[in-house]
Length: 186
Ligand code: S3P
Image (tube, rainbow, N blue to C red; front, side, top):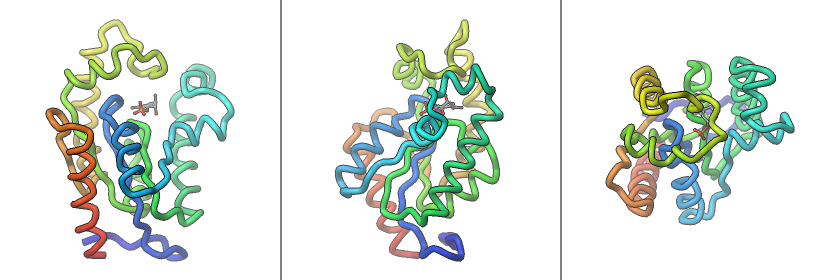
């Protein structure tokens, strides 16, 4: 059963995308936004805007725990603003905090975009703006982080979707259909 929204807001009908770096949250978010005519919000962009520096700089100058605090504050603000009818693409580590997982579920329908290490590696290989993947052996890093995080994504999400082998359009339409069913029940 859908959970209760914040007491001050009506139940929110946002779609929230969670998943590992390179799992396609931004791409699928854009597609869903177009299909539904909903604006797309990216929590990384919200944090960068709020802090006026890049994520990489936040990590190197202020450290990861500070970044995680910023993420929590960003989600609290979205909830406090009674955000509705939006697509929200989250940073890959945002669900790590139990508090954030609860807040995300209050914001709407949470979808985990699950992807294989191979596809994640392929999609993140050329990016230099993900400090956690700037390691000597990104494949090993991805595998070990996925091992730690998969249970967390599972706990956060209402729906798990294995995206490897699906087109952008197939993924987005699959999410749409199950979101309609979910919101129809709430
Ligand atoms: C992170 C994912 C990144 C960004 C930061 C930390 C993570 O977002 O928030 O580099 O801990 O998985 P994307 O998932 O959009 O790359």
